[in-house]
Image (cartoon, rainbow, N blue to C red; front, top):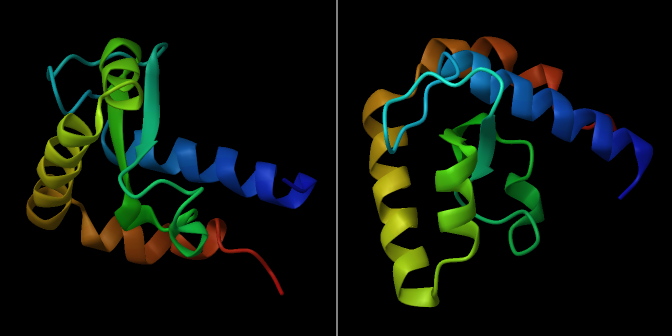
Length: 106
């Protein structure tokens, strides 16, 4: 991954966590130090969604590990749950205002 991509990925992660107020979607705990941004659609499979703010959700470290190490059937359930959350709750105004901060320049 290029240096520019790493910078944009870190920026994406921070914006996701700020948008969600550092609160884990799964357990509802506010965990500023251990919160992590999770890609709903993996960036390795969907590189075009790597910096999309609609493709992210905040989870705590424990739940992020649970998602990352889930088996295929469990992973599909997590993905469905996260997609529903994003569709219902994501602050669309925040995403629209900040999306340009993580988009790669061509």
